[in-house]
Amino acid sequence: MSYGFETLAIHAGQEPDERTGAVIPPIFQTSTFKQDAVGSPRLGYEYARSGNPTRDSLQECLAALEGGARGLTFASGLAAEDTLIRTVCKPGDHVIIPDDAYGGTFRLFAKVAQRWGLSWTAARISDVDDVRRKVTPNTKMIWVETPTNPLLSIADIAGLAAVARDAHALLVVDNTFASPYLQQPLALGADVVVHSTTKYVGGHSDVVGGALVLNDAGLADELKFHQNAMGAVNGPFDAWLTLRGVKTLAVRMERHCDNAEKVAEFLTHHPKVTQVLYPGLPEHPGHELAAKQMRRYGGMISFRMGDAAAAERVCNTTKVFTLAESLGGIESLIEHPGKMTHASVAGSELEVPADLVRLSVGIETIDDLLGDLAAALG
Image (cartoon, rainbow, N blue to C red):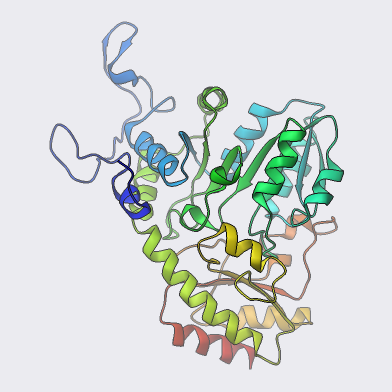
């Protein structure tokens, strides 16, 4: 039987506990497991880095929500990315990354993996032809964010999947901004989906984590080996908190989108705002593509003010929008990417405009959010 998204979010991987009947799966807060005999671990559990029932519940749930066969979860989104990179690539290989990407992802490629011998090239992932031109015989992965962070560009997942197939490379899609509720990249041809579950999946700004979801059984087994061998796994309480958050993902995302659409409209008509970057706006260059591959347009908005000092002043002035890094929680956040989340790309081809402000629109009362921005903008 095929279940809807909301049902899967609440039930997939989360059967009531067999022994007690507990409706919510328990937290298996243990580092090791008693074995029935030498070399005979019960249900395959021997050591919590290698496997934990609470983590398994989360992995199964996230796989179901992304329409994938296997899911693996990690201590952070970057831990998931690092495990994927070192599983798939070797020194001498090449990766294409977005010319607009999360600063931590850029740092991982440019400051860590490059020293290991992995080369990379930045491409406009909103332009399939530009990505195709950047492919080399050594390209092993095409790495995509859609929407991108922080400029909210939209990538044609199906089109880039075709490019990756022709190159015998993997298409990796970071689905953090959209969440599995708004977009399912595997169904559009992606090979691996990446999440920072810290963001919309967890949704409450109280737990850090990451995930990979895919269909290829062989690659999944390799990733599972590296997950255990490298050890950057999430603990059972973190897994349980993320499971708790994901149960309300659908209803939260609807409210995030409702509020973001109204905030984007407000900003579009404000005289001190020079540009609003939100795929839900008809004038956004990726609007039509986003409408095809996303359920709605998300809760992330960026806008420009034409002046860096003015952008910082707005970030420092809001009351309901909290000045903080991260995104995707129930509360609204505001930040200055150039000096905060994307400081690591300064001086590179991924450098973001100094007058850019990024909003993570939460689920508060919309009139309070609009009033807060109106007062901060002046």
